[in-house]
Image (cartoon, rainbow, N blue to C red):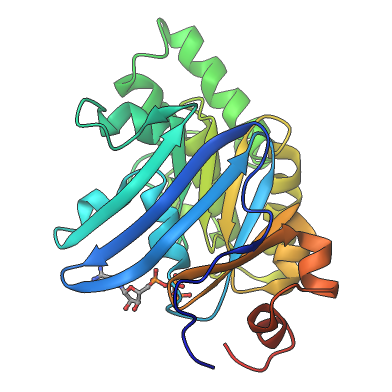
Length: 267
Ligand SMILES: Nc1ncnc2c1ncn2[C@@H]1O[C@H](COP(=O)(O)OP(=O)(O)OP(=O)(O)O)[C@@H](O)[C@H]1O
C-alpha cells in the first residue's frame, strides 16, 4: 500500500458545532514529518476514536490538541487548532489552564506519589478552584464519584494512590483529570495496561462521561472503538484517511485503506 499524495480525507471530518477544530495540521519531529495536513473537528459531547496502524501518528495528533507536544523539544506543529474558536497555539495562551480545559489520560496509569485524596486535590489547589477545605472535600468526592471509584476508596482516602490496582489507578487518573473541570478529555490508549474487567469499567465510564465532556480516544482495539465512540477517524502514515460514524467505519468503510486495516490486512 503506498502513501496517498495530496490525500483528501473522506467521510465527514467536519461537524456543525465543533468544540475543537484542527485545520491543515502538520507535525514535525525535527526534519521528519509525522502528521500531514490533517483537518478534523471534534464535536461537543461526542466520543471520537482515533485508530490506525502503529506509528501512523494517532498519539502525535492527540497530543497536539492540548499542546502536550510542546514538551518535546524537536517537535513543531503547523496549521491551526482552535478550542471554542480560540487559537490554542496563540503565544498568549498559557498552557497550564489550557491543559486543565483539555485534560489527558495516559496509557499507563500515572498517579502522583501522594494519597488518593491529594492526587485529586492537587489540580484544584493549583488552579484555585476550592475556597475552603469543605469545597475541596466536595470536589474530591464528586470527582471520585464521577470516575466510578468513590465506593471503593472512600474509607481510605489518605492511603497512597499507588497502592490501588491498575484499573483503580486509571480511574484515579480520570478522577484527577475531571477534578479541574475540563471540557475535553484526551485518552491515549487508556486501557492498554488493564485487564478485561478493568477495561470494561473504563469503557462504561467513558460512555457516562460523554454527557458532560468531549472525549477523543486513541485505541488499538477496534472492538473498543466500536463500543465507546460515535465517530471514528482512521489514520495511515500520518494522514487522516477517513472519518465516519463508527458503525459505518466498521461495516462499510469508505476508503480501501480503512477496509484493509479493519479486516486485519495490516497494522
Ligand atoms: N518523541 C518523538 N521523537 C521523534 N519521533 C517521534 C516521537 N514520537 C513519535 N515519533 C514518530 O512519529 C510517528 C508517529 O508516532 P505516534 O507515536 O504518534 O504514532 P501512533 O500511531 O500513536 O503509534 P502507536 O500506535 O505505536 O502508539 C512515528 O514515526 C514515530 O516514530
